[in-house]
Length: 171
Image (cartoon, rainbow, N blue to C red; front, side, top):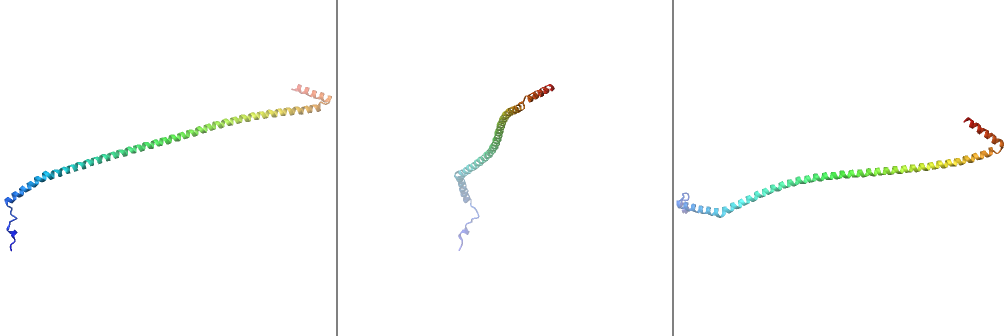
């Protein structure tokens, strides 16, 4: 039995076969280029543009996020500064109100103390005057009683008058 493929020379190309292979190859190449490679290359170009556009948008978004972070940080710093300023003003206002209240209380206390001292001095002077008046009245009454007892006789009256005259001469 003979193997029938061995009779055909496959290794040696024939010109007719090569011609038809070349025509078929160029036809397939033309069809692929017209109907397959053009759309494939267009899709690849569109995909490449889309990816590049996405990367650009991502870079812009990243820059915007960085700008927003910087803006947020600045706003936070401004808010903290404003908060500190408000707290400082509140403390100053508190201290001012406390000092004003202390001064007002001290003034009122001084006024009350001065008024109380004046009233005490007035009452003291009134009491001293009353005491002097009572002492004067008592002294007059005592002197009257003594004079009555001492001047009940004529001789005692003469002796008292002589003593007063002697005292007047000496002064």
